[in-house]
Image 1 (tube, rainbow, N blue to C red):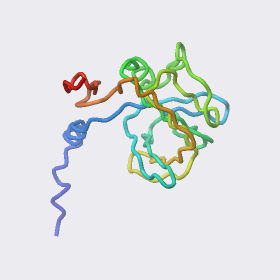
Image 2: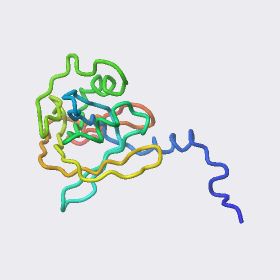
Image 3: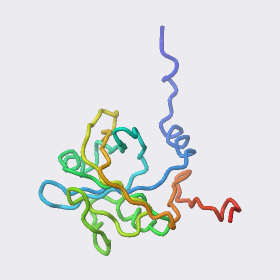
Length: 171
């Protein structure tokens, strides 16, 4: 008996289908073992549990900063606001000076909190899991802040998008 489910699996079509799900845009930050600042844009962020307070994000195994993230003592999930698209683009590029002209303050375990973010989730390591071509980080939230007056930056169909009351006609 053969497994016909995976015989015609198209990874490009799969990625396009995943793009139908609107996600927020985050920058995960941490301080590496040598005191270097680490930051990467990602939209693979989810809540996991309220008790204990857990969230998750996943990192591509090919990411150059993966070893530093695996040894980090803390993280910040910076949920970007609509006016931070440039920050998202900057932190999506490998081997560039992501921190030039980026305002931040130190958070839990010196993980950078990006100024102007929609929300900050300051986190401690909890567990990591095999996620195929990614490593899944489950982290425990130790502090959080929000800026409800901001509008979130979203990602949809491979492009930045904005979600806000003015788009829905709500005043």
